[in-house]
Image 1 (spheres, rainbow, N blue to C red):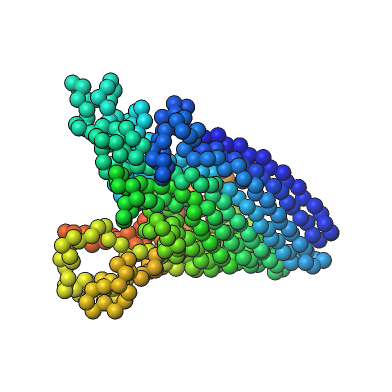
Image 2 (image 1 turned 90 degrees about the vertical axis):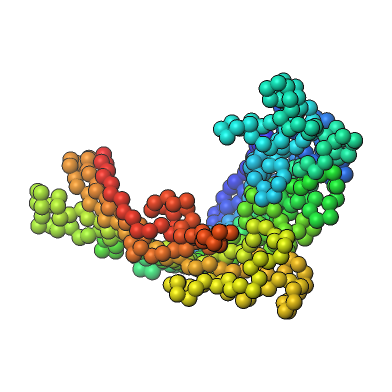
Amino acid sequence: MNAYNLYFQDSWQATKRLNLNFGMRYEYFGPLHSSKKDIAVFIPGTGLVIQGSGTDSIFPPDRNNFAPRIGFAYQATSKGDLVVRGGIGVFYDQINMNPFLDFRPPVTASQGIEGNAFGPSPVSTYSTNTLGQTKYNWGTGPGQAQAGGASIFSGVQKCVDPNCAAPGDPKGLSAYSVNQNFRTPYFYNLNLQVEKSLGNASVLQVGYVGSQGRKLNIVTNINAGSANFPNFGNILQLNSVGTSNYNSLQSTFRIRTWHGLSSQFGYTWSHALDEISEYRATIADDPNNIKLDYGNGDYDTRHLFTTNITYLLPKAGWARGWSDKLVNGWQLSSLWVLHSGQPFDITRSGKDLIGDPFAGLSHSFSKSIPGVQWINPAAFCTAGAVGCTGPTNPNGNVARNRFVGPSYKSVDFSVLKSVPITERVKVQLRAEMFNLFNRINFASGPGAVNGDGTITDTIGDFNGAPGIGPGEPFNMQLALKIIF
C-alpha cells in the first residue's frame, strides 16, 4: 500500500485584531496489493478475481482527496481579554489494514483477502497450530498437505470457476469482498470558541465542537437472507458508506495560579450518532438498508464533568535545615471524572430453533438480592407473537443503542513530597490513590446471563488493569523519583 501527501499552509494578519490561517492538503492512500499478485477479492457479477488477472488491485485507487481548511482568531476588545476563535477543515483517514487481513467477523466467513479459496494458492482460515500464523492450503502438493501427501481437508478442492459454479467445485465457501466504489473516509471538523479572562488568574472558555464523518468503513454480508450467490456461504464486503455525527457544547474554567492553587473545571454536553462505531468484528444488520443501524454511537456520552486541582502548600519561612526538608515541598493533587452512562443494545448470541425454552418464566432477579435491575423484561415481547401489540416485523422496533447504562464517578488523589538534595538534584516521593472512595462503577452492556445461569460481571471495562481502567476498585501506588 503506497501513500503520500502534500500540503500548503499560510496565515494572514487581516487587521490588528483579526488573524486568518488557511491551507490545503492532498492525500493519496493507494489500494492494497501484493508483490506476489496472489490475493483474491470477490466482485459481484464477476466472481473471485486474483490481483494481476483481471484487476491490478483489489479496489480502484481514490485520487480525489483534497482537504481544505481555514481558521481565524479575533480579539474582540482592545484590552485583549475577550477572544473568539473558530475553524473548519476536511481531514482524510488513512485506510486501516485490519479489515483486509484480520477482520474477525461475527459470522462464519473469511477474515480477509488472504482467506479467499481461489487462485494458484488458495487458503482457508484454519491455523496450522496454536502458535503459528500460517494457513492450511487446499491442495495436495508440497507445502499444501500433511504427512503422506493427503490433503488436510480431504475431498475439498479449490474453486475452478470464479463463482464456484463448475462441476466439482466446493459449495458454500465463504468469501471476502471489497466494494469497487470503495473510497477514503473523511471528516468535517469544525469548532467555534469564545474565551474570556476573568481577572489576572482565571479564564473561562465556552464553545461548540463538531465532527461529521463521511464514507466511513462498514462491512456487510451481501449474501445474507435470500442468497444472491447460491454457490457461496457468507460474503463479507467492505464498503465506504458509513456516516457519523458528533455535536458538543464544551466549557472550561481555568485558574492559572492563585495562592498556590491551580485548577481546571470542564463540562461537556455531547451527542454522537453513527451506523457502526467499530467496524472491526461488526457487520450491518441489513445490507440493503444501512440506515436501520443509525443511532446513538457506542461511545455517546451526553454529560461529562472533569476537574483537576493542584495545591502547593505554603512554604514555612521559619524552617531551616532538616525541618525545611520535612515541612516544605508538599503538594496535593486530585482528579475527578463524572459522566453519564453510555448506550448499549439488548442482544442474543443465537436463535432458539425450538422456540423459547424459558417462556412463561420470570426473567427478573430475586428481590432478596440487593441492587437495581437495570432492564425491565416486561417491556419486551416477541414481534408477531400472541399478545404482542407492536409491529409484526421480525426485526422488531427497538433502535440500536436504545438503552443507557449506569453513570461513572471516580476521584483520584495524590500526595507529593519534594526533598532537595543539591541545587540541581532532588528526590520526589509520591503516593497516588485511584478511586479514592472505592465507588463501584459498572460498565455498559457486556454482562449477560449464561446458559448455565451464571452472570458475567460488568465491573470495569479495561481488562482488569489496576489503577488505569474505569471501574477498578480502590488501589494505591507508591513511587520514588530522582530528578536532576
